[in-house]
Length: 390
Ligand code: HGY
Ligand code: MN
Ligand code: MN
Figure 1 (cartoon, rainbow, N blue to C red):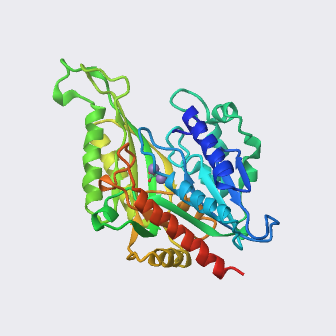
Figure 2 (tube, helix red, strand yellow):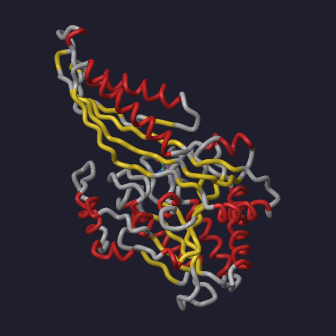
Figure 3 (tube, helix red, strand yellow):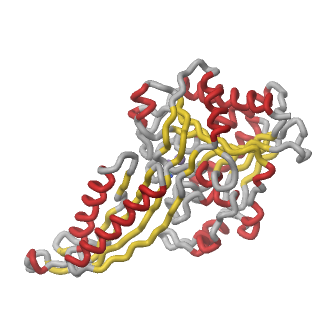
């Protein structure tokens, strides 16, 4: 479900339909970047004198991804609103549930586009980016009927919100191995992403002696093994070369070009940045030694986002009330909460995944029982917040 594809737009329509017809939201709209925004008014009936709790997650996915990455964090609060609506209950604050349109940055190099529009971080330069088929973001937005001129109006005033909470699948093996359904997130790892290319000389695979080659693919392979070793040497540091490609390569041609990506993450910006510096230095050394050229473009840099203590405590109380043990853990994955973190206090709740928590893979799966616990934890958080709120 990449950004603004037919599957993506169908997903937005479904979410809006369910918010409107099944859950009883007072306001539902698909905004200028494709976020699906549902508002369930508080006891002020939307008069605007009650603050809102902001929550949600993304509905776009990676290629060949799973069904629950992002979506869980939209449906859980939707289920809570449905139960409030069925009971005819109003909280002393409004509830704004957002299905963010673009978090993964798959079609365009614009991660957190959906949540970034709410925090005032939408970069107009993104509009001219072209996807793999040469379609610009501007063209894709216009084709989807989105009103680009309205994008700046999406920025939220943090003073009108109590904070941001996000439920998300863990996307890793920890809760599964501990046999725990829910986990309290302490911080979201900072990450940086790069797209690179090494350029050598394409030459005949049969006639070019091994000591006369300028093989771009072997250089990238050498860098990949360095990245693996460097990241493996430091706890909670991870680095991935997720894309590696010889454009228009041939079986009998020494690769003259090789494109690659880097994704480097750590619990602190300092550890992340030290790794980036070493990888850059090694890339330069490899290319110097092999008489190759390279370019490296940084496409994402998101700071580490520690959870707000008060909101983390609210999740702790909500989970404890279920009779579950508390387990605190960092998030290796990036989430929309790290974008909202730049504007308001935030904290996340993780739900266990099955199959060792595998994610970004169709094997991604959860259980109804764990999801029931997750919904009840969210309901507990809402009820506790209601008693706190005048
Ligand atoms: O890559 C991530 O951490 C997230 O899935 N966008
Ligand atoms: Mn993801
Ligand atoms: Mn996600």
